[in-house]
Amino acid sequence: MQTLQTYRKKRDFLKTKEPKGKSFQKTKKVKKLIFVVQKHWAKNLHYDFRIQIGRSLRSWAVPKGMPKKNGDKRLAVLTENHPLEYAKFEGTIPEGQYGAGKVKIVDFGFFENIKKDKNKKEISLSKSFKSGQVEVFLKGSKIKGPYALIRYKDEKTWLLIKMKKIKS
Ligand code: MN
Image (cartoon, rainbow, N blue to C red):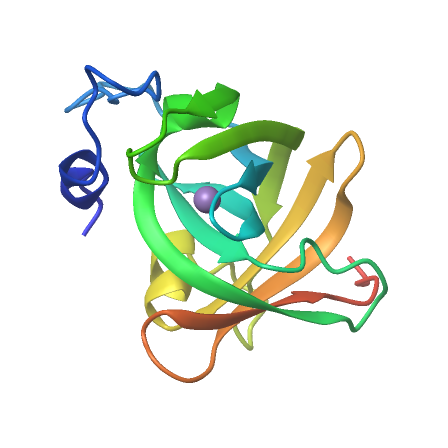
């Protein structure tokens, strides 16, 4: 499901300045896909890693932040879809609201889907998300390179892995 239902249900937009997101964004064929990493001082400090799949941001909470060295793995917990506009959000979610605390953008940029099948044909992002094996090449100003997201236990439990350089 690509909807923002869960996202909206959790929030009171009269109280939080987070974007509500447009219901049916009539986007042109998207050429560039966006990602963002946000530092979030919620009850437990964590980082939110979000990548655009279709018309929303698939989101994972990463307690320890982005893996730094090749081969490093970090726990990433799948959270609800966020609207695309969220990639620009910084501010403080008020006390008593879902995710209360400060949000700051660590890095923002474009990315490429690099997941290929055996015949080196690209597998779509939504397909690789469904199969629990996403591979992206991030082109942020600080965060660059190939990363994999692998679902390994249940629907919500993923690993975020910094991949070794890939041959193109
Ligand atoms: Mn968060």
